[in-house]
Image 1 (cartoon, rainbow over the protein chains, first blue to last red):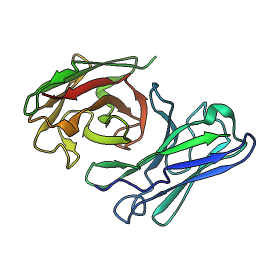
Image 2: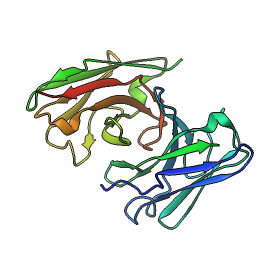
Image 3: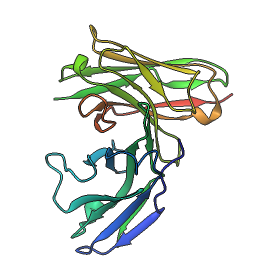
Image 4: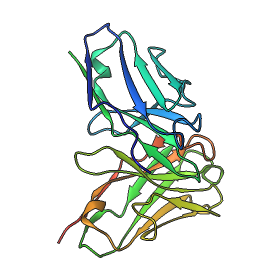
Length: 110
Length: 120
């Protein structure tokens, strides 16, 4: 159950696009299509942004999109807004009814 | 609306025990799997435990297996996490979280979090 690997930080200017990667193994990200992404503003509760690799829950802007290739999943945020500045975490099902999160990525909107 | 309210956190000495509870409302509790997720100070999110909708099976991360026990009471819409043999590294904010469906490991609603501090 090693944490998935995410970049510690990414940044972008308003209106730009950023992509956050999430690398695991064939035992988690690569082995299942149960990948999700969470937005976490400090002091608030994490929010589900993407599930099933690329689906968006109701109310999540279509600026947020997800994809997966092999053992790496990605979250792309297009048309950055200042309110997108937050920590982002990926999560994958890891078999045997266990889950694993990524280490988190701090997004700074310059 | 869905509401999850944790209680029972606090300060405990290393080696001690503590029980967290989570009161659920606003959805058919007995139909959904539930999870505990934690976040240590300055660290990322960590999945801790999962219990099936009927409470028949529960699963744990390697870091807490054998020390933590998760349970649920579907008649009272409550979730519990019994923590024993606590270590300094268990210090974290603990969240109860609802699974999106049954056992997808998608967390669509979260409680506000409860701080557990393990310190002498």
